[in-house]
Image 1 (cartoon, rainbow, N blue to C red):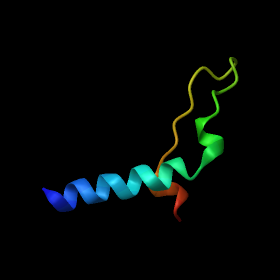
Image 2: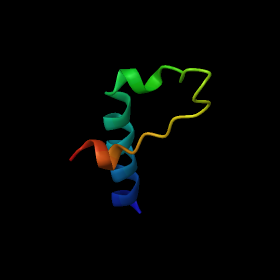
Image 3: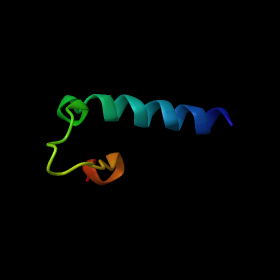
Length: 41
C-alpha cells in the first residue's frame, strides 16, 4: 500500500510541475484531460 501511495504522490508532483495544465480551458473546449503518463514520453 505504501508503494501505491508513493506512486500517487510522485504522479501528483509531476502533474503540478506542468503549471499550464492548471489554467482553465477555453470556453469553446469545455474540458481538457491531461495524461501525465503520456506527457513523460
